[in-house]
Image 1: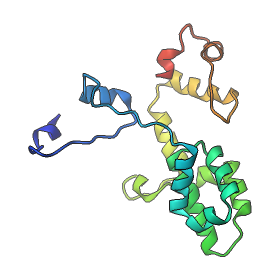
Image 2: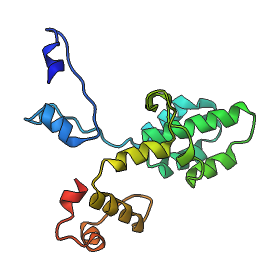
Image 3: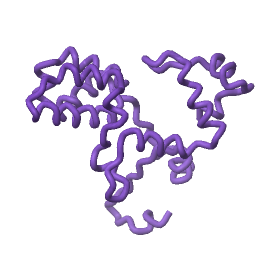
Image 4: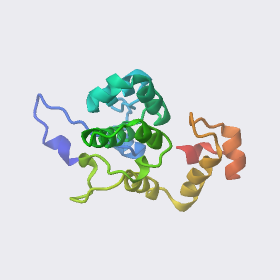
Length: 176
């Protein structure tokens, strides 16, 4: 790994990835891998508060429901925060927008945060998610699509049910 060669005596290297195999290749002993857990409800609400403090302060209960519906996902919270900030700047009521975001009508077509731009092109959340699923082989992508038959919130899955829906003997390799 060429970046390691450039490290000074009091330097460290931090690499983030969503691809487990990359982390495993960089640290074969597994000691340097940290799996970031899902945000807690309070942490997710704090993140949304950082993005749109006045809205969270005025409508904390609705915002708490929103972070639950968005399953505490930071990218979704950033996009939702951006939509709420834009709506609030226009002086429009945000109650309808919160409901639309909760129902995914607005969120999926909204622009992802600027740090997620592909080159210089601003992408939608849908494009970011599609990029993730495009990395899957065709069979695994099809299995991912079949997860839609399970209850949407909270997203919990039973191994035996996945085995039946996917028609495989062992669902664990696909889940990985």
